[in-house]
Length: 546
Image (cartoon, rainbow, N blue to C red; front, side, top):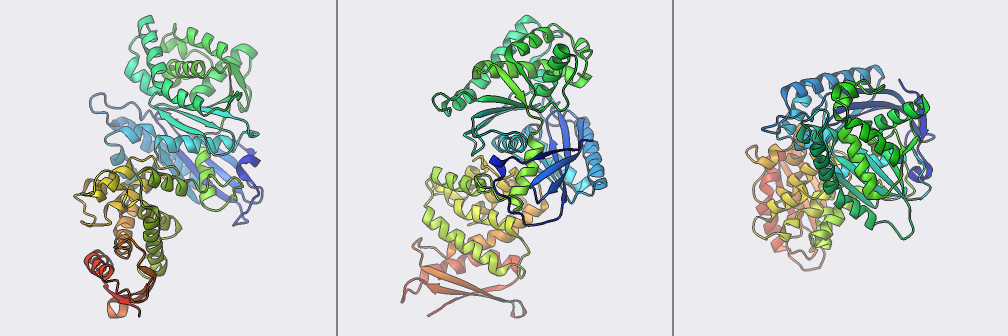
């Protein structure tokens, strides 16, 4: 049990503006390729800060996937299920009000990864958010910012996981670069190490492969450094902490507790790598502080760090014990109004990511903003009457409205399907994979067919909640699109008058120009109202005000 308090640093927090006074208990779970980690924290709103009151870690090796199919194995999924059940028990014992769980590389890439998430939801009632590589890097950045002072100086963060390595360049403000590369300690060990101890030929091939994979993200990172800047390298994750532990024990006879802030040199790492490459798994496991499971993958992880430091021309690395799971906590605090962020980039990352994507695909933004305005007005005026969704779901509808027409960038024909693809593969920051899937599905159904189980994109929604969101909010988006059929802002104002007792839903429309009969908008409303009427069981009656 850990009872160490870290005040969320000034460059992240700004002046606190808290919406609640009492302490809150929250749990965050990171379902990784190698291990499942959980922290339970006590949030103190008046500081603002959070205290880690419990840490849990179980090595489950989800990354040990079937060599032929790439699927998560039954054994690995069973281990993960047991670990998640244990996490739930610990969370309950600490009276946590909510568990926020995220899954990364192994689940993201496995063909049956989403089936596994559905199984977890069905058996444990636990919804796991699947996040993209760049989103993982962003939350790692938030986690590090919560435990380390940057003083507005450039820092490179490296997180070596089981399936991927994340690199971030930032100075306490908005990250300059975020990258996620498919080199991880478990992945490389499984795919590229067959000799024990590793042969010279295999070692050199592994070293060359890692260097080749890291060259591009490192070059991109370097391109965002300003003249004269010398960034400090910060390392997170179990692999880097294990290497720091080896060095500290052997050079000083003891391991600092905590490791936060401890550093070692590239030359020290090179000596460790040269020694590890000559040892078998069994011999590595005899190194104090390195268990059997870590011994299997430590060489690949150490080599990733060595090549990254060499490419980045950094001679030293400092340890930060905060990473993804703490970043999940910070992100939750930001999105729930528990932090008034002076820098304002974290809390607005979702909106800015949507607008950046719209710009990338040359979306007609004034038109899309009108559609988004209609969609959110429909949402607000029907809340508590036709649906009970809140602010988070409203934001998903807004995002889909802004991007619903981005598929025109590919082709006018079937552009709603192209919109789905572009949104789904657009690396939207600040959103979970499930939220991105929901936005993409909402955009997909702004015209033509309504949601159907036979549609692969609809089946990709692993959460029943998000399928329901698409069912109920896509009819609102269809109506919003119809309201600007000519894309000239013909409708100035809308007012909803639901009449459930009469089985009708009156929609009052105020034209922008006197004398405009808005014939095309009214025709489009009649054409698109079927989905609305079927979902809500009300007849839509548009009424044009004189």
